[in-house]
Image (cartoon, rainbow, N blue to C red):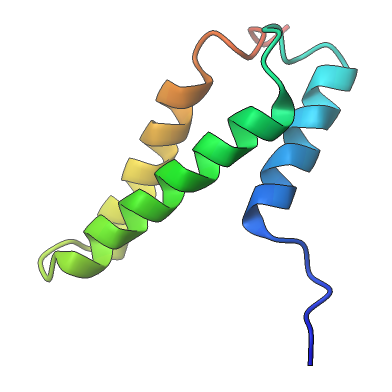
Length: 80
């Protein structure tokens, strides 16, 4: 049985492409390339989470949000 749900990378790319289409992605970065690196960062942070018996899921979620914020700095337009 195969899944028809989009992959995490596909979701990132779809979201980034939509942001670019409406002018909210200000850099010239390719959404597919940025999506690749965002997915890689998310999976790396998940590896850190499962390797650390002391890390709470809340901390893991905060680290993902912070990583996305850092990775997206300079790519998104400021809120209007």
